[in-house]
Length: 126
Image 1 (tube, rainbow, N blue to C red):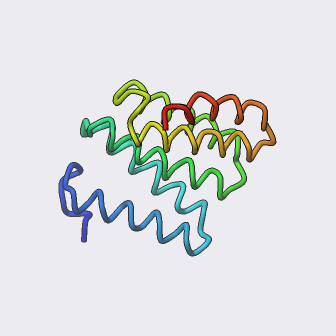
Image 2: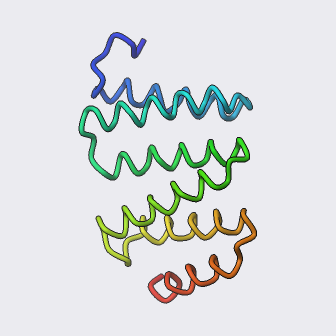
């Protein structure tokens, strides 16, 4: 099992990700949320690279969305977009994808004008 492995171990991180994804796929979203939050906390504790933390945040945002907590998901997707923008610039594929996910989160809240405005900044770059 992954529990005996050090926190920074890639097998442990992978197992936690798979556990969270599996719980979510099975409809156990509250349990998946606990796993996602624990994984994010561990990533921060071990000093994981920012790209890894942003990916973990993406899983967390998806779980919040599954739970109907759209405002929480929106805040996280905005942070992910800003994080990739800062790390990689506006022309990075990760940044463009994060921008699209952020616009989708805005759309989930019926904030279509904001979503369009956000995408208008991204589309010329894509």
